[in-house]
Length: 106
Image 1 (cartoon, rainbow, N blue to C red):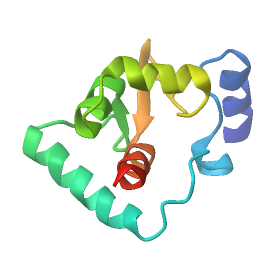
Image 2 (cartoon, helix red, strand yellow):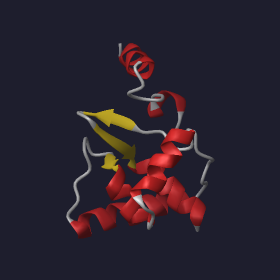
Image 3 (tube, rainbow, N blue to C red):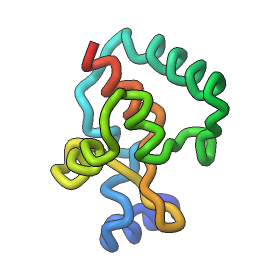
Image 4 (cartoon, rainbow, N blue to C red):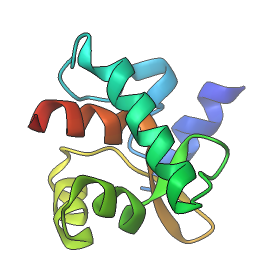
């Protein structure tokens, strides 16, 4: 059932792929990812930001953490470099993808 929902959303351009079934599409960040996830979680708590569904950040929140402009993340989204999820008209990035990008940039 879940896969059918993701297929439906994908056909409508609302979601590129299921990150749980098909991965994130990002290169494996190796051992740096768990520590980066911890840093990201601590940053979220310090800023008082609550992730949607516990694992999604708005594009502007992810850009702020990465030290980038939101437009840069939107460009990555349009190029297919960054997988995003649309929910109620907003675009979200997973915490895992955000941490993977931060780990790759270090």
